[in-house]
Picture 1 (cartoon, rainbow, N blue to C red):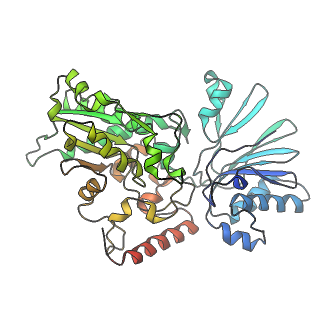
Picture 2 (cartoon, rainbow, N blue to C red):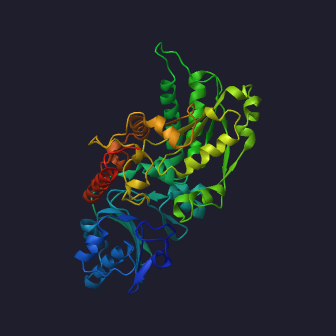
Picture 3 (cartoon, rainbow, N blue to C red):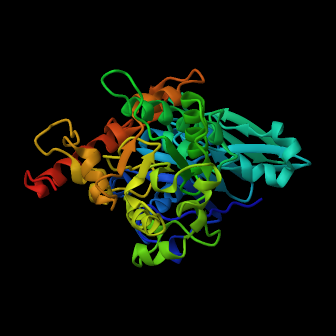
Length: 449
């Protein structure tokens, strides 16, 4: 039996000593998530902070339980932890007798298991298991439900529940984090991203309609995706525009992602230095050659670049001016995002714990208690991203995103959208989120850039 983990740290820095799993007294722990009340619990439980990682909190909790328990009962251990932990924690536990994997009762992150050919395997994402057992055996994969665990002991696998499920799956998993061939709570990442693009197209045409209800959408337009999670959205965007307009709006490839590059926010160096090696530009897609193949006038063609979201803005601020350099008419470059503006920090495992990291917060109206964006946000954002006065930047609406996420019968309340709305599903995150916004408002001194 073995556990391992491949993930950047969200508490503390990315140092070797914080690499998971952590172990002590013959017990090991790894987890996917982030514990909001980590410091408070370390002090409350009398645990020593050695490396400044919330993983050591989980290790300390399971170690204490195992030392004190007369009979090791996984449900009792997980119930104790669940009663204290505020945050997101899909955990793997291993000792000499048993292996346990669990999913917290909110189900913020995915967790899948499979039994195949005498093996038990568990992974956050379903695609990783398919690669081991073969695509043809995908039907054997089982998704742990929120508040559920699986235990391997004495060559037997048992499942159980340690807490009632209160689902709050992270919507960002579906539009960005998940590998394109994975699922979360039964919903496929590719389908959600493709449908998001279609919804964006419907909203797009409403913005190009005059007072007489006539379309003013450009006669010539092409669509490209920002690799990789933006590509399915761009496909849906282009195909739905084609269907609604009655003429072809081609989907093209204008950018290629370097397979050896990492996420730019994980590096300490200048993001631009990282981004220079992250993408390759396809010149014919932007200089008009591909547009001409479709009978378009290159000088009148509009280019719509679709991305999954705008969080920090590092990638877009680098890409938009770069793409414009290859265009005959760079003023006809538009940025479209498959997520509403991200205005609030995340404390559930996405690496955005502070408000100052978020591009949209620069345009919040400090006089509005509801943390609304200033009037003219899209125009100001376009300038911030380096688009010309004739270009534009727009997001999908929250209502539009909700329609996509709930099309399969779920309620929007079953998703965590706290980074969009500020409505955090756990008490600790709600307190920290509001504190972060108010601190930022105070630092801004009532001024807005």
